[in-house]
Amino acid sequence: MNHSKAKIIRIVTGWISGALFGSGMIISGMVDPNKVIAFLDIFGEWDPSLAFVMGGALIVFTPIYHFMIKKRKKAINGDLFKWTSNTTVDGTLISGAVIFGVGWGVAGLCPGPAIASIGGGSNIILAFTLSMIVGMVGANQYLAGRLPLPIVGYRKNICAITAGATSDSATPSTNQ
Amino acid sequence: MEFTIPWASLFGGMLLGLSAALLMLFSGKVAGISGVIGGLLTPQKRESSWRAAFLAGMILSLLIVAPLGFALPDISDKNILLVSFSGLLVGFGTRLGNGCTSGHGIVGMGRFSKRSIYATLAFMVTAIAVVLIRRLLGAL
Image (cartoon, rainbow over all chains, first blue to last red; front, side):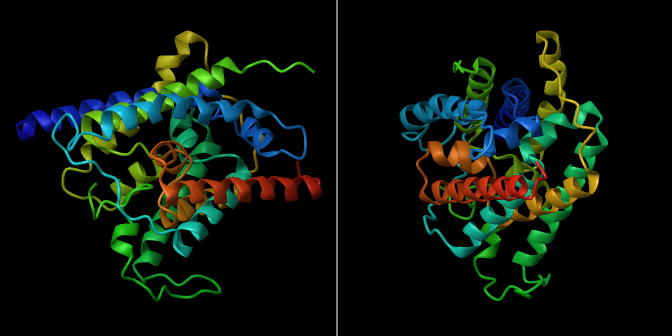
């Protein structure tokens, strides 16, 4: 497939997936921080409905991945798959997940619902999104050894970073 | 109390799964929102336009679901300082941990990735603990 066609598919797929993703966020109720907190409040008045969001996502994604995507060498437009061969569960992964968990538990917002809510014009969402971007830039600087953190100081082991700083759940340095 | 299946949550979740599957099948990308944004902050060749298109689709999805009767909740009662602090942690943590609820929770878990399963457990347990602490402090 030629490059311009691959690029068109990449962009059109990106837009359609984004529209589906945002719609899913709003329809499912993930955009409501009160609902998210009620879902996390398992020792209080637990509202389990958001468990069905992840459940619903996994019953659709998992079979498509294992029966259609996994056996392919490349995506339909010819691009390589952007997941990683890295299977090491390390301190960076877990500490990042824990820090994210604290933020999620404090406000009930995570990146997806925030972006899907931007169009609502809420200054709360705007403040969250801008702080989140600042946090991301901070993390990139920390991973590159340029930003000291309280207690831990500068990052010493910088080698794993270029992989760590660019992709979600998968590191792009090694395809497939 | 009788339990009823939250159909909207289930259907909305299925749309998220469909979105992630289409994105990966057609163009090989991971539908992780923190990753999509993070990738725009450190742009690489052929990695920016689809991310911008994805985010544009997400932002405009509001208009797609509005005729179906779905609207955003009113959250103007939230404390903006607390929300901003939370945003810093969410941004920092998702980059350090390589993903959020979508990248790890849907795509990674769906792929049975060990890293994603551990990360999802870690952020779920932490968030549940934080909400419990807030409940004990009377802040809920």
